[in-house]
Image (tube, rainbow, N blue to C red; front, side):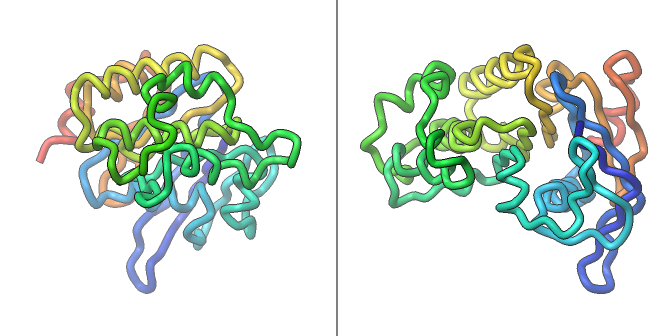
Length: 231
């Protein structure tokens, strides 16, 4: 399980997160929701080791992540799909996928067949440059690149942003399938309400860097959550 316990995060004198807590168990989707600028990406950066926290603790399977760089967290099974995809536009699809293998032992540095079962379009485009793919195809590539790591924790930052509805359905199907395997914790940051609602086993809503609503699926109050997402 991933546990985020009362963390604070600052950018200089500005405080982005205030005593934020979150738990993401294996075999479940934990959804972080909120408007733009409320601290969602700051929370993800803290989990992934891209930004140091100024208070609290982040643990994975009981191990304190303090001081562990992003690459060290990747070796512990942290997979990350950043907002905006961040694929390498001049590398081929195959080369983009292989960039995710560096954190694995030498004997495991291959792209699993199940990646192409989840995203069959990528198998037909292995020689294409990433920058030549559509936005939806690039998002599928970004998720596939994280999955080649065989992660035990998968963190997705707004995977539906700017994506056509047909691809959103494919991504939803893949996330639901990964959850059903029961060997991975999934943290999903999302503003698209219906997508988040349909996938979330647990949820947390951020407002101005603080968690104002949280709970499991049974406690998900659609009216209250929507009130914190609308502008």
